[in-house]
Each structure stands twice: as structure tokens, then as C-alpha cells.
Length: 369
Image (cartoon, rainbow, N blue to C red):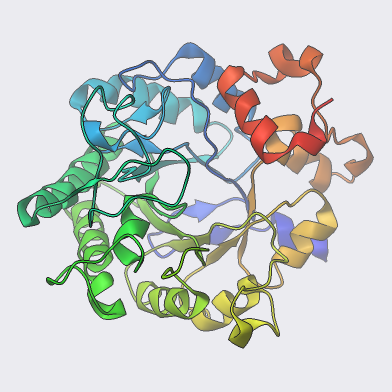
């Protein structure tokens, strides 16, 4: 029965049908050209990992030039990117795999070197709690409205490029999360203050993107939203805040919500939410209103089954770097053949360039040999 559950399709609110319960999660590749144009290496990297999962969510694509968070980052801030993005979408869309473009802005999580001398921007002039962080410039009202417009234009470009959907990247401390966080958002206007006011940007952004899809997409088109459940900073986002956010988003015209977790068994840092995992609390709050992508160090079929106890879809990240054929091996009872580690000698075969290797060294040193 477990195999049937993992392999059965799921039709989203938009009408897009996912052929199984497995999603390739967005992971930083650092493979694009300096101006955000996609490279052949990047196309080959995604081609190798497409076809078996029901959908591939790309690495983050920045919607404004001053939203660039790292070198080698995909861009969607200009029409010049459409041709390359079209190649990316068609590369992913083989054997029924859906192509979803993740759209984002780094906000304060960047620096002047990456922005070619420009000061980073954020909801408030408060620097991140990390080494060598710069104090960002506070966004003006007109810049905030222009930012929402930039996400709208990025969505239109994704539609033109042939993607099946977009994921709004509201996680991992980037700009959208910065608006919701009491650490990075100290504003006293309509965009900040109470949790309700800190939700204002997300509220308008999601509505703008879903309305844009209604106006411009010629068929079913997915809109998903990714979020991080907690921050370590004080003040910072706590699970109570995130459950408020999730409750609001679950009533939106979204196709899925996607929690960002490094371990699906993770328990909250808040004393009031220790009885269950974060994933369980979030799934209970959603209460069937929208599918949830559960994620966090899924390596085995048992892990996938455990995640599906508290979600509708399973996000796969690092395991697809070492084993691009993980899904077929799981569904065909060949789990003993799964490669969990990567050696230097495997890099060419697996299309692991320096940027991805750096990601691996940081995120999964236990799997390198």
C-alpha cells in the first residue's frame, strides 16, 4: 500500500496533476552566468534529475538585479532571460515532470560585492546576525510597490518561458521572510509592526501573483509558497507566528505550501510546541485546505512514508545530488542500489560543479568521500 501511495498522482487546485508524490526541492547550483543567464552545465544538471520526480523546483531566480544573493544565480528580472528559461523548462518537462521556477529577492542577505557596489535593501535598516553582514537601506513605499511589480513581471516571464508554475520563495531569511520577521522588519507604517501588519507584504504579493496567473496563463499554472518555520534571532519568527502565516496562506488561491526544514523530525525551539514535530503542527493547522510539501533529510523509503504521514508531497533535496535515480529505485524496490555518497571521481557523471560541491560541503559533509 505504501508503494501505491507514493506513486499515485495528485491533482492541485490549479488543475495541474503531479504524477507521484515526489518533488525535487530547490537547491543552490551557482551555475548561471554572471548576468543570470542559464548555462549548458545547468541544463544538463537538471536534465539528469528530471523525468522521475513529479516536479522540479529550480534554484532561486532573482526578480531584481539588486536581489542577487550569490554569484552564479539564475535571473528572471529581464526579458533577456526568457530564452534560457524556456530551455530550462523544456529540459525539465520530460516524462511528465512539471517545471516550477522559484522566484525570490535576497534582500539584506547579500553584499556590495555581489551587487557591484550597490547597498543591499531590506524592510528596515537592520543588519543580519551573521559575520560581515552589511546594514541594508530601508525600502521606500514606492520601492516596495515596485518590488511586488517585479515579482509580477517575473511570473509573466515564467509563463512565457513555458514553466508549469512558480514558487514564491518566502523562506531561508530572504526578503519575503524579512518582511514577516520582527528582527528584520522594524517599520511603523502599514508594512510593519504587529504580526498582522508584517503579513501585509506577503498578502499583497501572493494576491498579485495569483491574479497575474489568472490574467496571463493560458492553462493550469501552479503557484506555491515556501516558508521557514522559525528564526534563532531575538526578536525573530517563532512557530506561533508561522502557524498564523500558514493559516492565512492556506485560505489563498495557492496550489501548495512548502516548509523549509533540514530534518522532518525537527521539534520547535518554543517551549509551547514541544509535543509534536514542526511538520505535524503545520499540517494540522492547514487541515487539508492546501497540499503541504514535507521535507528534511529524506534518504529512504521509510523516511518518505514518515513524511507523508504529515504532508501530501515529499520534497527531495540532497539525496538527488548523489542519486538522481532515487525515485525509480524506491518505487521499484531497488533501495539497496541507492548511492548516498559522492566522491570526487563521481562529479563529472553527476554534473556536480564547484558551486554544487560547495553546497554539499556545507550541507552534507557526511556524504562526501
